[in-house]
Amino acid sequence: MQHRPSSTSPAPSARCPECGAPPVDGLDCWGQLGAVLAWEWQDPELFALHFVTVASYNLQHPAQFTVEALAGLKRAYLDHLDRGTPVSEIRARAGAGAKGTQRVRKPQEDQHPVLRLFDRTIADVYQPDHPQGAADRVRAWASAIRHQLAADSEE
Image (cartoon, rainbow, N blue to C red; front, side, top):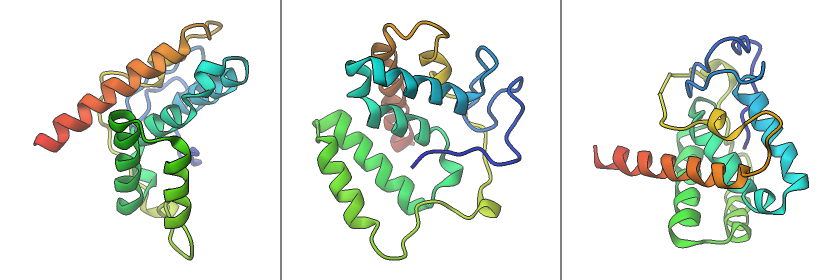
């Protein structure tokens, strides 16, 4: 479940219209995610956080997902962060729920990004030419999102 920019994605010089992340080193937030994911191959600690990285990004880009898929992603994310549910179990649950004709992504014409500013975004994780410490930055990003989700549920 990864965000793939449409032909209407902003130019890399603009902030993301959904998460508000600024461009970094000429990369929009999608490009920054790709760079961080590329670092995973050289960093086992970061690779172990792959689910957290991708889920964090997707939770900050919800316009592409159905309401049901987004709710499932939030549950899985919180289960993993709060209860330590293994990613293998999360994948098994997602696989069982995705059988048949169920879709997780909305049709392109139904995707309407709404800007929501976050305390941290992928731009706080991606530091050009500095993959060292990226795992700690992913954990800090996830913690900020976790706190924001808690605040949202109290509203």
